[in-house]
Image 1 (cartoon, one colour):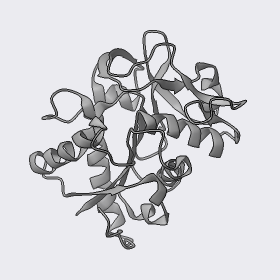
Image 2 (image 1 turned 90 degrees about the vertical axis):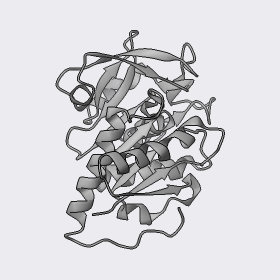
Image 3 (image 1 turned 60 degrees about the horizontal axis):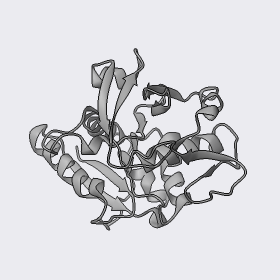
Amino acid sequence: MTAYIALVGDRSPHVRSHNRVPGLLERMRERDQLDLDVYWVATNEVDDALKSFDGIWVLPGSPYRSESGAIAAIQTAREHQIPFLGTCGGFQHAMLEFARNKAGALQVQHGETTPDADDLLIVPLACSLDGHEGAINVVPDTRAAQLLGAERSMERYHCSYGLDSSRLELLTEHGMVFSGYDDDNDARIAELPDHPFYLASLFQPELSGDGTRPHPFVQAFARAAADHSCQIVEVGRTDIPAAR
């Protein structure tokens, strides 16, 4: 069965992640015999058609053309049980979506787009991680631990904003699990255990290695999308948009 994957982001040749991801999914198509059909969806073009996809990956590249579009894509994935991966900006906006729509913190904002807001959930990092690698300490018995197969992993970043650590309790009280932290105990991986596949990382797993072998998070996301495709074919699928 064909698995339809939406890459949500404002595609740019200047964003390394945007250049890397299609090739990674193509390698999985060839190596793992996964029938993946990949579509780009700009943040200002997000609509109800996303409900028809088997996987939604919100990519780096913030600030997005439409913050509300990025958040709507994440909400669609979360509420409709569609496999979701969010990396870098995708992680940041996944935290915004969950805080607003699940935890009831309707006024939380992103410090990159509204730095003077009274209630910032996403704040500047004490030290920018743009272009850096950093260690991740993985929480045992989580999806991240299962996929990484190690208690510690080195990962690559291209970001300058992260989750305000003082707000973790707000999110965990409503079901978010933080499954990876840096050495300063700041959250770097988040997941929802009651979702078929929901994983967000502040680092960019798509930049792991030289691009010839997908990171375990990317592999697991693609396989979850393939599994979703097998399930959804039983109930029918609405039209997939023509733009790619």
